[in-house]
Amino acid sequence: MCIARYSPCHYLWCQLLPLKGVKLQLIEIELDEITVLGEEIDMVKPDSYKYPPMDIEDLSPYESIRIVNGNPCTNCIASLASYLHGYIDTGVIESATQRVDM
Image (cartoon, rainbow, N blue to C red; front, side, top):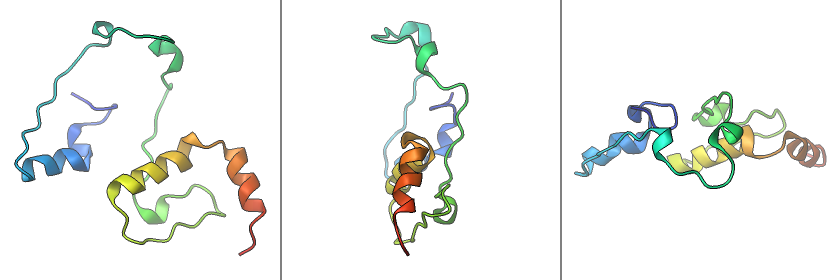
């Protein structure tokens, strides 16, 4: 069973729930058992997905953006990684960082 194509043990929250006394119960659902509204899944799902890095030092794919480690939570790291590695148009990043003097 996978969550977004990864084993549940890949996710820190799946590892931490049992330590907090929470029983993790995952169920598997076949895609054809789900009613999809809007676009068909095959039209919007990515052909491939590379999980973004979770180490602060490897987080930014842009040479002009340096991430400073202030001991953020794993959710903050994952959110920033997701945006830097796919949600933001690279043209926007390149345009914004060209106007910054350091």
